Amino acid sequence: MRMQHGGDLSKAAAEFGGSEKDWLDLSTGINPIAYPALNHITSRGLADLPNARAEAALIASARAAYSVPIETGLAAAPGTQAIITALPQILSPNSSIAIVSPTYSSHEESWKTAGAKTQLIGREDIHHTDTDHLLLVNPNNPDGHIFSKQELLEIAASKQKNGGFLIVDEAFMDLYPEASIIPELGSLPILVLRSFGKFFGLAGLRLGALVGPQRITKKLQKQLGSWAISGPALDVGHAAFSDITWQAEMRTLLKIETDLFRQVLFEHQVSIVGQTDLYTLIEYPLAHQLHEALARKQVWTRVFNYNKNWMRLGLPVGAENRLRFANALKTSLNMLENHARL
Image (tube, rainbow, N blue to C red; front, side):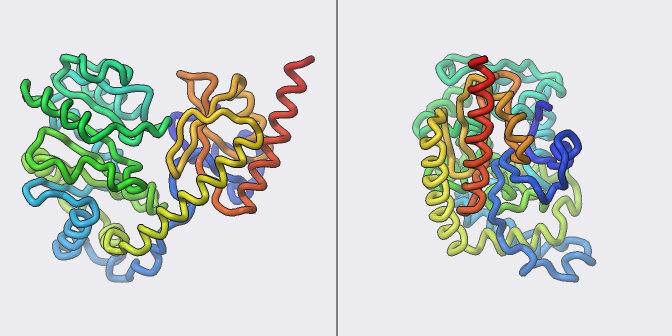
């Protein structure tokens, strides 16, 4: 099984057995420690149509959390996937775009589906493209590479000359807010996508944001229409964005857990290609076979069609989960290495 996205343990259970609760899911970069959403979901939020006051409160708290300049727009959406799908139409499907790759595949799919001239480029070519737009993910998924603010500003300046945009997907930037380009935006031709569900561990809530020039964020709001964000998402999002203490403590905890997980990988002599505090990209010559061997131990991981040697691992939080993964990894590596010697 070769997944386009992580998650969906129902597929893993259907192929390799067990119930979903039996699995250790390391196939996503979603925080396994979720924000306490149930504390903020009310019967009114569930029963009533979303209201303007709740939406305004969410927008205000998101702007503060992301340090959005006053002249820059912010539009909320039911997940960043909705933004990814909408952007080609908003910016004109007749335009051309270069996407820094390898990265999250849905960007390429959305632009190609819209009919745009789409090309994939490596990081080394980032300053040598003549397309209308350039898109990159920062930190990149799956290798965790972070582009500097100065480099992003230089790219934006070059796109501004022909009326194009630099599009930056900051899905995992809640981990490193100091690296976000958002505080520098002003009126620059930069569009930034932010995901709520990954850092706050609430992917099912479906909440995301587009930050950039107001004329673009207003187009997105108009395209999404009324009541695009559910009442519970408005309430939980506002609470989470406003909870600065939880965010700071979570960043510290995830860094500690990532350091502990890195030690597990080092102990098993696994080569780390890149990393954030929510996922780790490793290299192994038999990555797809390792993926299947771990699945037989009910540990679900992510592999890629474009690189047979790569595997991405989500963060196994806690000593029990780390030990479970370490035991499954040791057994799987020994099996594959013994088989290779035969």
